[in-house]
View 1: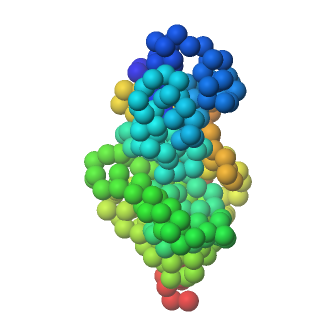
View 2 (view 1 turned 180 degrees about the vertical axis):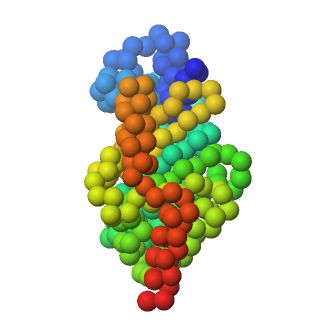
Length: 269
């Protein structure tokens, strides 16, 4: 299968090609950029992006007339570094299967719910920064505007449904938003009730992504950290865990009933 290259990987590949064409080693370029050769290696592998001042020094060293600085402007992420690559792949996926243990998945969040999460995670925020992060998150959900692709499966632990984020009205709106997507068939919804006890995914968040022309990947995330997995054995292990958890979940109609009851409780409280 074709290996997808993210924009930052393409940036790094172009940097390597331009460096070699100039006849420079990584050590020589690092000396001009005033960084370590290891960092140049990270740039070329697409694991890191240079700072703007680094990109400007790269352009000067390689005589590329601002090429890498201009490209960097378009690459500076709207998302946390650990999620950027997963966000790019998400837009290409034909099937997305998500599990959430504690919070509604980003693709399904309402603006008010997202705002409450961001406010809790970053108490010293500015309003402009908060607004930008909410807009970026809601922009991601536009891929659900197409009724045909991707196919989305969502498995929610009951803790996601019961925890009050942003207040009861915000929670009622959030659950009703998910219900709307489920009842129109846009997503397939499953809930794992407290009565199921322990299950295979209760320790974290998982997203599985499948594509038309490349191998599937898995993305796992914790506090300020995330990892994209493409090793076939590790992806297969994640698929197995997802399947096991799905076996402990309620079927769609019962899941919808659970969310509806919770939404009504929040609305009428």
